[in-house]
Amino acid sequence: MPEIVPNKDRKYVMLAFRIIGEFGAVIAVPVVVLALLGKHLDERFGTGPWLRAAGFVLAAIITSAIIYRRAKHYGKEYAALDKKEEPNKE
Image (cartoon, rainbow, N blue to C red):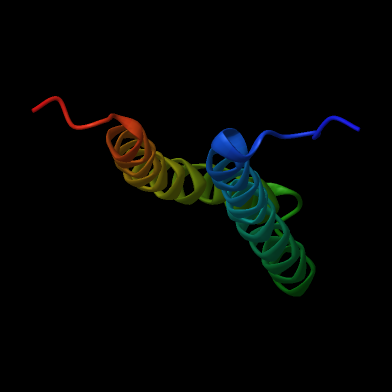
């Protein structure tokens, strides 16, 4: 029976799963938290949808900054995986 993921590719697959999981959380958590906070503040102050909309905008800005930093980190981590695979050419 063939392997689903060959052993040589396993580290890339595991890195991909870490990225997917972390980016999913980074996108979802700020949106949910700030949307709920905006809804609560809109109801409290009677401002309509404005604070909820501001929460979405703030969540997008926060998420973009976090994803940019984490993508740079994961890019370096991916490059390091490639370097570990190269045989010594001495």
